Length: 180
Length: 133
Image 1: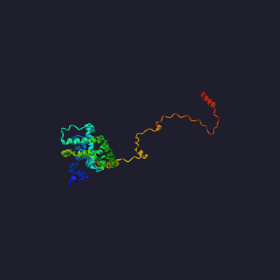
Image 2: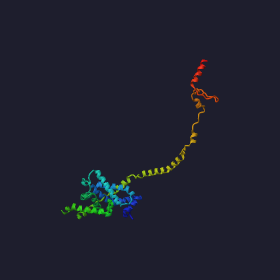
Image 3: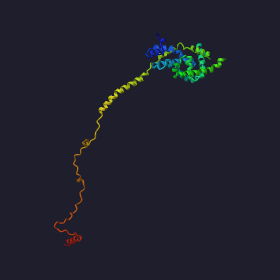
Image 4: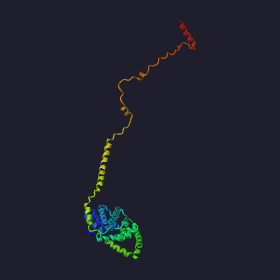
C-alpha cells in the first residue's frame, strides 16, 4: 500500500513515528485545499502560497504532538484560518474590503484563480463570519456536516442551522443578479 | 442561484496550488533547524530528579547533626555555674560598720532586796550627796 492510499490518520501516525516521506504525502494531499482556502481569504496568489507554506511548516512542528481528537484536516483548517488572519493583519487591511492587486504580472491561470476567489469572496462577504465558514467548508470544500462541525468546533445541529441561514442569505444576495 | 453556486464551486475546485509549492515546503522544512523545544523540559526534569535525590540525603544529614535539645535542670545549671574566686572575701559581718557602743546595763534589783518604788527624787539626792562628798 503506497502512502497516497493511506488514510489521513495513518499518514500522521507514520509522520509522528519519524517517516519523513509521510509528511510529503500529507503536503501533496492537502496543499490544494489549503491553498484554495487561503486564496479566498487573502485574494493574492503569492500570499496564498506563502500562507500555505507557513501552514505546513507549522504542521511539521504541530502534527508531531497531534492527539487525534479531531481529523488532521480540521487541524490544518484551523491553522490556515489563523495564519491567514495573521497575514491579513500584517497587511493592515480589512480582508473583506480589499480588492486584488495588480494582476498584470501574474500568469493567466492565476488571474482566473484570483477572479474566482474574488467572486467567492464577494459572494460570502455579506454573511456573518460563522455562516461564511460553513459555506466555505460545507459547500465549497464539500466537507460532511460532522467534519464541518469538528472544524468549527460546534455541534452538527449548529452547522445545519448556520447553513440554512447562509443559504437563505445567499439567495437574497444573488437572487436579483441571477434574475437579470 | 444554484446554477451560479455550482459554477462557482467548479471554478473554486479548479484552483490549484503552484507546482513548486510542495518542493518549497520540503526545502524549507529541511532548512529549518531541528526543534530544541525538548531541551528546557529535559533540563527541568533533570534538575527535579537531582533535587529529589539530594533532598532526603540532606535531610538525613541535618537530622544527624542536629544537637539534642537541652533540657534545663537545676543540677545542670548548677554545674554550669562559674566557680567562685579563690581569694578570701570578708564576711558580711566584717564588712558591716562597727556597732554602736553598748547601752549601759539596766540596773537590776537583787532578789533579797525588797522592791521599792523607784523614785527619781532619791536618785537626785544620791547624786547630790556624791557631789558634796
